[in-house]
Length: 134
Length: 96
Image (cartoon, rainbow over the protein chains, first blue to last red):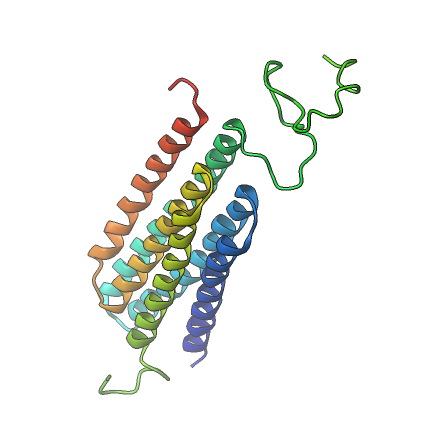
């Protein structure tokens, strides 16, 4: 049946992107790039894995099983919770990492420095250009 | 395992294999939590572990036909979001 094939394709995509999140979390050199791997790949994989569960619930519901409706609706609620909370948490972690002074690998200047008493330059060797600013 | 033919492969067995793969992802993220050089690295690892645990709870509930695991997953998602926000505010060092 085409429905089973769709469920297995969803499971394959979800597991592939979840493993990609784990590998990227090990291999990336930086907090911000690790945040890319650990948040976006996990969100995309969870969309497809919970989508497979929703399809199974809909198929059980189609076969006159009442538990399938409960499975599909509660899985949809869990998916909405993940989709609402995961990007907000990632943004909070990135802002906390930037404000606590973690620098990206290979960065020369910091263009996101908000307050004037924070150091706007990471490398203090080129102080001659900074004299005209502020 | 199923007595009648309602699928190509048994879906519950497939779901248990998926849960094992997600546990492997949790182990990979746990290595980052242990080895992380700074505190936001560990927070990123814990956030990834939280999301994977939510997904594996949903898949586990679908494998055993138990809806209570999915309800627990919803509550776990909201609580892990709140804990992530508070840890981020603590690392930021500002006023609450």
